[in-house]
Image (cartoon, rainbow, N blue to C red; front, side, top):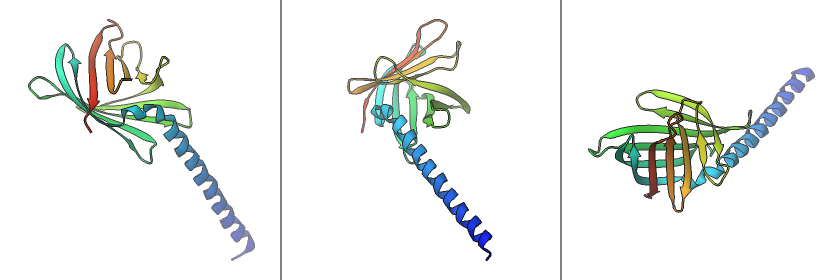
Length: 167
């Protein structure tokens, strides 16, 4: 093998090390940026109201993929114990643009991705998709979690849930 070939191969190895170091730093940054949502981690059960109907719910929140994503799976049931609403919400921090993002997967087969923001007046998070899209606010409420969805044009509460630990 020629000396030039050896140098090229060695430089690729050092490039791989730099990429690995950058990926590790991004992993640490992403995990740390989500830490303000750690109050949500666990299994929860709760009661509330969705579109003026009493509901019960289950919420399971966990860290995923080396701690760089937070996955929240929520199932709401009506008074007949039928599934009224189900979603999976993925929280992630993007080191590239330095924003917290929320991707929501809602049955049946609907998705959205939005920017999310820490609450300015204490722990919690809010996200919204524009002037005609509801705002979601999730915050700790003592040892419980309060989740509220506000309608943007009527300024009314579309739904709310108060969850307590189930694990």
